[in-house]
Image 1 (cartoon, rainbow, N blue to C red):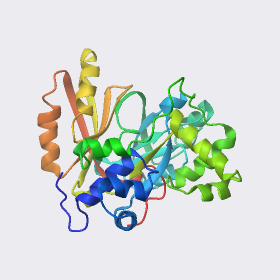
Image 2 (tube, one colour; image 1 turned 120 degrees about the vertical axis):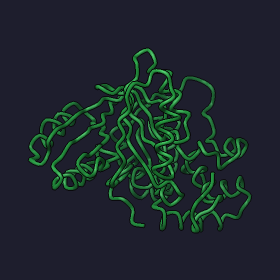
Image 3 (cartoon, rainbow, N blue to C red; image 1 turned 90 degrees about the vertical axis):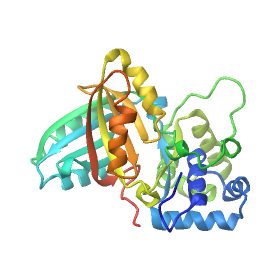
Image 4 (cartoon, rainbow, N blue to C red; image 1 turned 45 degrees about the vertical axis):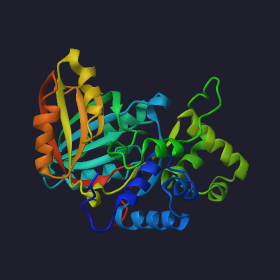
Length: 328
């Protein structure tokens, strides 16, 4: 994977890949696998945070928790799109709030905890927004790629042996613990959402639990799959300057095959089967518009069963995993 920047290099990519595999891995563990010093890893991590917006975030796995995910497409008046996107980005039940289509459409992932939350957002607050022209809601039915599976690993900065050495230890054989976030876990989950690498002493201070209790509960949440760590960073700093949302219409009998094929494409950061007129939604990252065109006309367009593709480049990103967007 070539890095087209004078600021970051292959070691930075390897660090990002390591954090995708285990966002809570210690610097010493990462350093041992990468063959560098702890101080080097810590220094690179701090620079990635400061200059590339790197964040490691604790994320609920909605699928494991039995919660629905919805992608909203909001067509707005040109002078209202930014205000709507900003308001959505501030909500705790949203992620991936982006402005597309020359600044007249907002796309947003929402994870309502209850039906009342969903009704309040979709039929309450949004419908009362005067600058909103149209809403389309797509329920995510099946995720082919994305979520806890990081994008940069597709470019293989780490060898298979290095990636295996960094993989979190598996839980002992036996029935897996049920994926459950209890009410008294909420302060712990909130702290991990703000910083997925928050230390155990800090978690003890924030939650009022003992350090041993915090360690056990974090291990249980991660081990059950109720929670996982994810990373966000500015991909443009690594040469991938063009990002776009794709809405793909596929023949029903080819839906699974096309979704699986797209999951293997290096350009695809996320792809899910959805409800609505299009039946696949994808987020793609390319170095430039020429590479995006090559993907649409080649890698994607050549798949049997693809009938129609609508593409919408991202104009501005208001929120990915957390809000506000980190300062660069």
